[in-house]
Length: 470
Image 1 (spheres, rainbow, N blue to C red):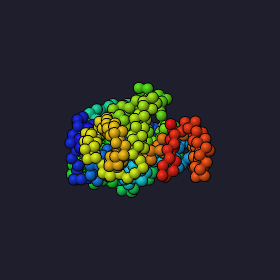
Image 2: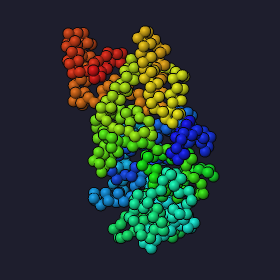
Image 3: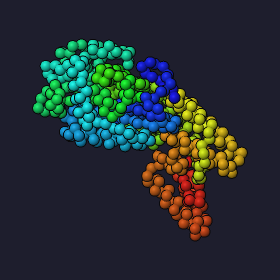
Image 4: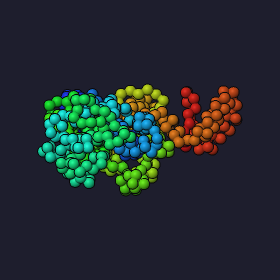
């Protein structure tokens, strides 16, 4: 397995901390709003990574956090009149449902910031005791970046105070402009904050953004004397300052590095612009799922190498869908039936491609080639049962590795059919089946023609009549 490491900026051979095991932590959403295509892209990239490791025989432990306390959340609470718990629970549940629609497996560990406060407080106190963090007169706690000689080694970038997104208000008591907040003290009776343990030297408040992930990683993973986890991932926008700050505070608190490998996926763009609410082009996932099936979106969003920026285009999505359609038309051609064993050469080629830093372009080309050669072979010998069984096994492996191709093919081609039309088609098919049983073939032919006029094709099988959009 070769992975592109964002720190060393090159592909490296993957060597796990523990043989046969992989620990992955992916920065999850801040749950104050609906998920957008950028969230989907990140989740899909690391779902592919997890699937590939599992297919290679590794035992994978994946964690993805939820930031459920943050200034943006507090602002949304004030605007909505809902409690913080009510608001964040709603968006967490919607996020999980939308990820499920994309075929993204749930993480093994899904920590929340509000459920990790003890671990957060303990890490902050360790840093204070080492004089790497300090408490200001207002009760805020800051990390002293000057105490970390390796600060900047993750992103190879150090920004000034204005560019540092600490997600807290500016504080003039900072020792250094680059220092970032670990804890924000309560400022008033109506402020949302949490009590601290009696053993801490700082008062009630709420955690800064960066400390949450570091504390949760140390809480849930046990590494070795060099690293806590194998892989830390997220969107490219998190490299600085978020991951830089995570690495610094973890390094200073524990004495070892947070992660052995750092991976980042590219941005999602619409019409060539980075997705941003300020640009007015944020494409919510919930809206995309109203128009497109989750598997179609999955295929499309995964069709570009994960490190590259992705330019979302409905025209390209339709082209991508046609490519996926070819796989399902082949599956329809070899269905129904039982699978045998996956073709060893095909399996190896796919795994080799995905082991090369998730080279999806080669993987999809291999699938296209398999579809074409199989169709040619079936044209020459339509009754080749062994080939049909192997093809079904190949498609099952594609579904396991890449997360598409697992639907029943006729159901796949029914996607997007209006519910009223679907009910009408089912009624006509039922009436036609009845007419055939009664040997009223004239009536049966008339009903068939009515179905075809609706833009629907049908196929009679031993299991009944199957239909799809023509």
